[in-house]
Image 1 (cartoon, rainbow, N blue to C red):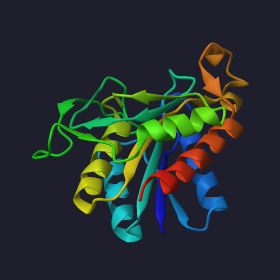
Image 2: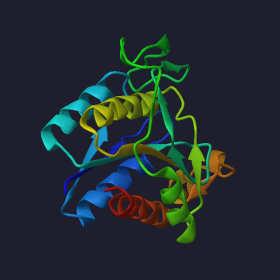
Image 3: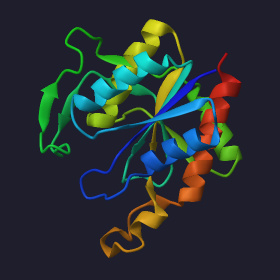
Image 4: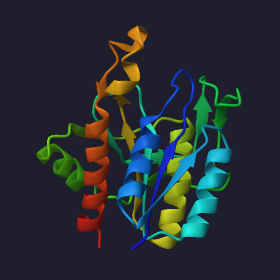
Length: 202
């Protein structure tokens, strides 16, 4: 069983990204897991993802991204065929109402068992919710392309948003009121999501 996990590198005002740390942790602690860290750049993130899907040919895919407005785990339900954001990517570009795939459907739904994963996390002390919008930034772009691949290959895949790590804000007084979660708990959440994906998906 081969599992691909993806995360993102630093972006905007964040010098580190907990999504990268979670993906690397899962790869280092599980021999059947490979991690891919995607650039926070429109187009390039999707290109790297598709190259890794082709190279690894995984049986499962779990992607992680940072949402700095939440203090819990967001299990994403829906990816939309839209790229639009006032926040520039790491090359300074912004897009407005651009399609991800010109002939793709408006939306894809995750192929992960969201409700069961949510219950699995909560029973193990991790706050988690279902989310019906992954936004329209680069996380959503990756989610959409991943789901296009998942529907074509009929393989389980999905996207998870995680909060800022507590350790990231220790020296950032401007972020003290920002919701956050300890890195230890974020890694535990990653483990539980991967464990649940293996248990609940045949």
